[in-house]
Image 1 (tube, chains in turn orange, green, purple):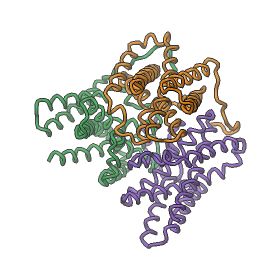
Image 2: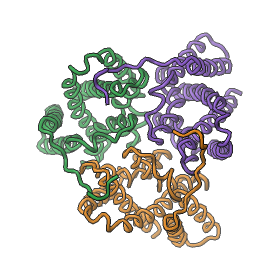
Image 3: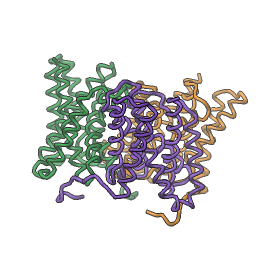
Image 4: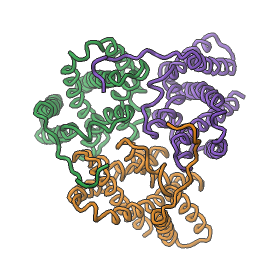
Length: 208
Length: 208
Length: 208
């Protein structure tokens, strides 16, 4: 049951990220192939980097046709939804926030199966959740949003810490998973709703 | 014999890509070391990503001094050819198109030796052929050409599909290889000659 | 003893690079999380790429909590030093030059334990030393400094060649290490002091 649950989480997160990648790529006027690649990179970028770093090779999506098919179909559907993009901006954002929570937990759980400590597990969760967006931004030639705006990765880290806290008090696994996904989801929601950002740290005189 | 044939393909493709990388780097006024690195990244980027994704480590060019030497010499020769750059733009383009076909097949064949299915093999072929150019563009700080202009990767995908079709009808291996390389080569030629692009998919009101 | 020596080298190099990454990220007005990530990427980027290319997985910093903790603390300290940034620009540069030498030797020595030849070892050393900076620049959306300004990687290559020369004449290992680190350090110093650059190689008429 838990592994099946994890599987559904994975598919849902993949769809959420593929949609957000496709929408941003269309916004930048890429051609259809470009939209497909950015959609793909956004959806599997985080998991791929995590798999490479821990030596889980071939990487997940090569071992699993479902992921590839899901992303492909999502990207195609996204392209046909393009005209409705503006109306869907809230949905797009909810997708993204949900994916953020989902992937963080997937990364943490994979780290646990590999016997890594808490710090590394949370780092792996954050990488899984956030690196797809970083890769998307690098490919689209902009400084990753992640580094500039609103609380994003910080939500993953907080959610990850709570995951290990709840684990200490022996809550059922599925409860922990759902609670943590929702926590990360709501941190992201609140951060955007109330425009909460991390402080910038810079020197006033050394601009470029 | 076929493996020897594959080997020559590999060298030729490497030269073609190293030249195109070096020329673009010189166009951007990098110093000699920068030209060498971009030339190298363009030539081995696709194969390196493919090797990492499938866990074929150490990656190919670490196991094979020939590749490194070939790229190094190609980059040096390219630098001395710099003054003749403009006269060679057609040659440069032909090199690039040939490399595109060559690397696609190399990637597909490696996928087959690892028992991957058709879809994954074609994806690996396309990554092998196209990712060097993506890496080059990311390092040179521009949105990858691949995502914006003309049919490029689509030729690899079509060539890959035809590879598996010809394989079904049991043509000799070397014939299949040559035919598919030429198909990808001519798709690229025709795409540039007649300025055939994939349609863009975008929303008119959400520019940035 | 030598392995302990290598370990201290690794820590010192990590600190040097984390500082330089954090300072550049603050200069670009990233938020705290962005500064942490860029600091981290600069410090472990080179070693991570090296580990991935040679299949040394999980990559080093996942197997070693010390690295992660050192970078984290360094980044935090760097953030609080931000106001003193300008006064520290010389120190920052010395840190960077020292890290350059340190990491080159770490990379070469790892290559030797894996039985690679001289050329590959020097390439691995140069990747270890320089790729963190390339990754930093790619994430900050600028053409890597490495490719444009002053002798940087060339110092690593020269230092690497001297490493193998000294090894031929059977000097003690620690002496070789220190001498080569200092050579790379001083090449960098002299290059910046006297503004020595590699020649650019380009075509005058094909600008962009």
